[in-house]
Image (cartoon, rainbow over all chains, first blue to last red; front, side, top):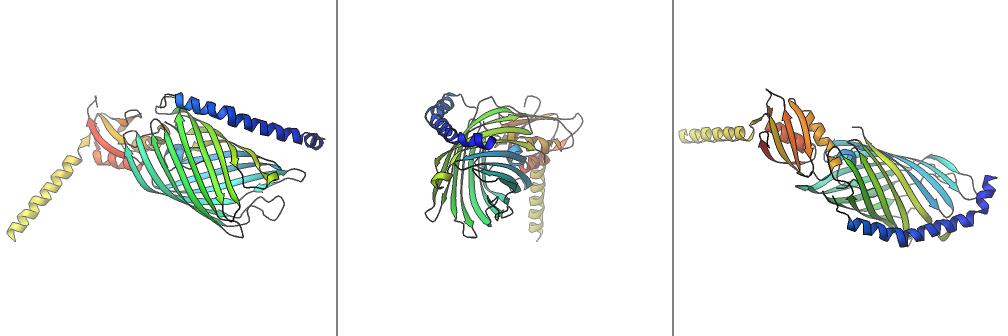
Length: 281
Length: 103
């Protein structure tokens, strides 16, 4: 009964998604930009989709979990990610990323379970601190393991080992933060290599103090170019974040596709992320 | 050889004196400038590291000023070097130390 109901309204649902996105791009985004520019800006938190070179507080040491709701033209995907960091020193960190994935394709049975496990390490290469400012740069090496089942349909994992080498930079002041990340992924098992590029700016909305009570706005561009003529994926990602005291952070961001290299009937409508970071260590 | 020994002795004495002036014990209220203190949520590690120093009674982190006001328990003294090492270990760059209640 439910399947029939959703099936008969599928066209309407797609139309609604498109209308929401058009409204978002034409009305909401310019409004967000205007609000950001008119604010008396005072510090920000770690970006929601882009990595940060700052490995301090909840920004680096916090255990992070978030849910991604991915609406695609031919499927709905939910993934719950757990990121566990461990700082060996203030300049060297290792992390484990454990994903749980649930995929519900249109007109086919859904599947869920463990996705591809990732391990990464970050090492700080450069740090220049000033009064109320810091400029930091680090190198990040990520290894993706094909732990997600790739033999069943829909596949929960890529079925391939992937190695990514990235450079993460950030300049943070008490008034704003700018973050950038570029990386190259080498993929095995016939998957294409890709070039990752992310940039983020963050602005605080509340006066800064310690212990923190912060509300931050972010605007990010998150992209990856897939080689061998596959194409470019690019998302515009506004987000909001609340830091409640020393050890707790809540955040949410929406990724709107600006370019999608997927075939026409498999493209993304949007990705919604809702998450938290808790300082345990 | 005698001259060399005298020079060596003077050199060692100067080094010891220098080390002593750089590592004066801290007491009472002390304000320390901390560079890189650009975000409140980054400061937890700084607070945690400074709390580990025996004799530290209170820690007041001022993000706007980029400084930390340390309150040292009455009758206690702590080493300046220990404080500087803790700030570095927390991932920040220590600056000038001002002694006295008015910072």
